[in-house]
Image (tube, rainbow, N blue to C red; front, side, top):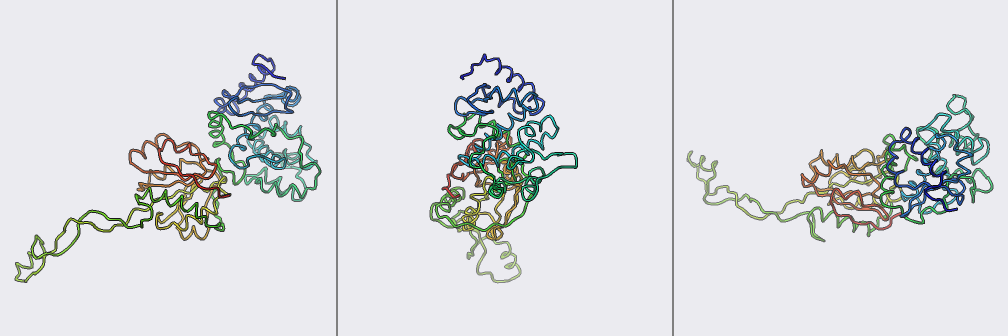
Length: 444
């Protein structure tokens, strides 16, 4: 079935979505304007197709049966867009059925916490049985919000409680839980919302992906270590340093030396022109002149001569992304930076949705401070309030947009900024800063 723009069911769904979203999520207006809304029976529930022809697809029978209200329709659309956004934050290139189930559990819980009223949660409560594992984790428990919740027993209940708490449960916890449930059919996971088979087949159109990233930046976090989101409270923890990768060290060292104005292979000292203090048998040394007036013999006079001397080069301020999407590469990056102290300022600035400076000694001990989210604005604001004139940002690039006023102010101050981007990361955020980007080797 190939729908057309004139399909009355597609027109009706489009009208309902546009009428519902300005109230529920007004920031979706621009994104929805980039997606063609179609109906088709080629998919069981709903899906978003990417590529140059980006479409939001609905199965008309499913929509009529389960999305009778605008609230249910909003939850279905939000679920699909969350899943697309997750599929394009590099967490996984292609999802397994178990991973799809885990992501759906986190997404559904966050959506229910965002829209906790009965009208919005009804979609998940109707689709999934509260007593049947593993599907019960895809919906709120019976009696949720009444103070008499009926949680699942055992470890499944513990994870279920986490999903519907401020802490949330991570997808890793759900992955570990699934095999312990000993439920048949988890290799297929039929019954999940959306069509996940074609995800990752085509890249999203740039304008669509740009809007998805911007919206995800303002949503509640997907999991405690999710990456591009608002994050939670700052958490102090300690990690073990990974293996020191010489190819990563070389990439970082080259960027640091460029920013410091050093040639390859040179050290931290440089020749500089300036005045050199010396002594001469003549001169205008005021102190010596006074001593002569008192009758002293002064054989030499202090004098300043122009000359060349050795001076220390300024060290580069390093901003290291410690958001959730960096979890797979943060350990080898700690090891690489720990060995580059001659070129790095005394503190490495760890950034998530806040900036926390740690000394090289603390970095070597694996001390990490993160809120799990990320926002490039905290980096550019930190730079503006500091006296640093050169900085290296080490990140996967999923950090949001640099505010135009920050970029203008940094250029006016002639602050030099470069970035070292992880393998597969996105360097687009550096556009307003105009700095050079280096590509790190694959580390995870």
